[in-house]
Length: 247
Image (cartoon, rainbow, N blue to C red; front, top):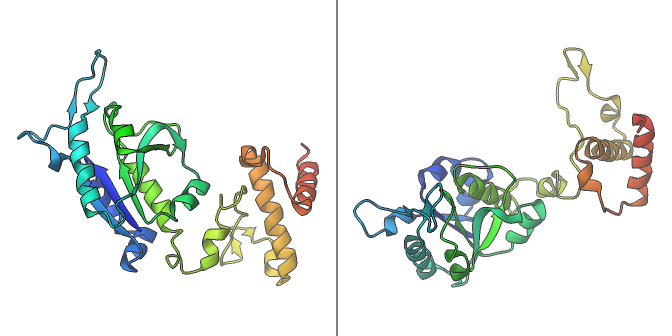
């Protein structure tokens, strides 16, 4: 997979892409990350990439032409000629695990990182960008959001994770949070690992983990269960949990 990132701050990514699963994916030749500094495509000596908004108001707006030229440079080097183009934007489609799964099948993705008050609105349809949001909060720019997308997608590429089942078992791979996890020693300051996890009974452990995943989801993120059709086993476990919790 090839990720091209159009950004005013390429330095943001240089350390981040050398760590974690993104590093592993790059080292294995499964991911190519290309940083495209938009400022390199300006025409004045100041490297100007922003201007005042028409109609007045606070903030500055990213100008269109440097973005167009940066994007055209990506197309010239594009293996497919038709990359999927994303724009990090607070008004975009919410980024979820399902979206990450969808994106991992793309051979080539371009991410345009927004900055300042936003980008000239005409850019979006002219480069065919899909707006995408990583959450309802304000960032200083689109770079952190782009890194979130890159990391979430990179770890799903076949061959990146050492354990192929790890990605499938992660929170949000289905609409449940993970069950609690523990490791050695058995006793930490008087708090012990649940005995069932030491029992060696794999079926009981499976049911316990499923029960606690449902419990955690119901208590902490009940919105994930809304509108979901649960299996008979999951519904039975949820009913038992509600009785136990007195709700």
